Amino acid sequence: MGEKPTAENTVVPERSEEELWRLYRKKRDPAIRERLVKQYAPLVKYVAGKVAIGMPHNVEFDDLVGYGVFGLFDAIEKFDPDKHVKFKTYAVTRIRGAIFDELRSIDWVPRSVRQKTREVEETVRRLEASLGRAAHDNEIAAAMGVSVKDFEKLMLKISGTSVLSLNDVWYTGDDNDKVSIADSIESPKSLNPEIIVEKDEIRRVIISAISELPEKEKKVLVLYYYEDLTLKEIGQVLEVTESRVSQLHTKAILRLRAKLTNLKKGIM
Image 1 (cartoon, rainbow, N blue to C red):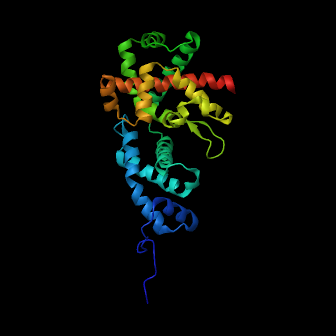
Image 2: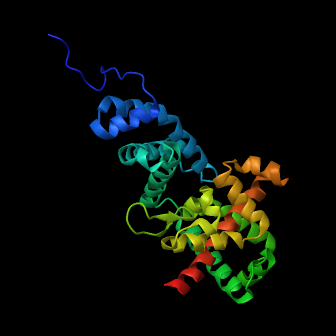
Image 3: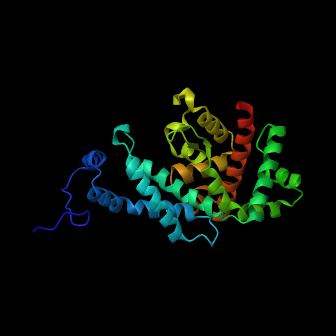
């Protein structure tokens, strides 16, 4: 008697990627799923590598990859080719989300760092609300009662948490209506507020907040999340050190979160 077909020994005929997706959505064939997982496995390592930048040493790259694999499985199960979105674009969001969900659940940020992050964010929120503009480093440092040099050191210390905060969900409707700051930076369309439909009010708020950032901080966000450059590459573009880029990135995120906190209070 012949061997019973399994996901391991089933041969999937050569097909276009579009055909594969349509076939998988129709039949949920384990052999096709396995092929898709193998094809997109490098994407998990790519996203994990991006997330790993700026993370503390106690966060292992292999662990991030492991968390991201669950996001890839989720993306494969929920992807709809009829929505005319490339799978890679869709999967990156799911993979990153799975990694950050797991990081939140294990509570990897030291309490002292989290407390300092909140302190800086609240200081920035109050300062910028009263000034009506972006606060300068010396103004934030003075309000916190520290020197500018110590403030810069603090920015480096909390830089790992800023990536996590960027991926916080700011609005949750149904499964497709979750909006994070990172999503708004990464989507080319979302950089143009005119084309955003009315129901995406929170996305408009995010874009407005991004547009009001100091120029260098805005550039760091766009180059990192939209142009996909590393912190080192951004440093070369802006002609500053990698640690300076990390500081700019952290300040941009804290400033954004502070600004969004003020804006959310105004629209809720």
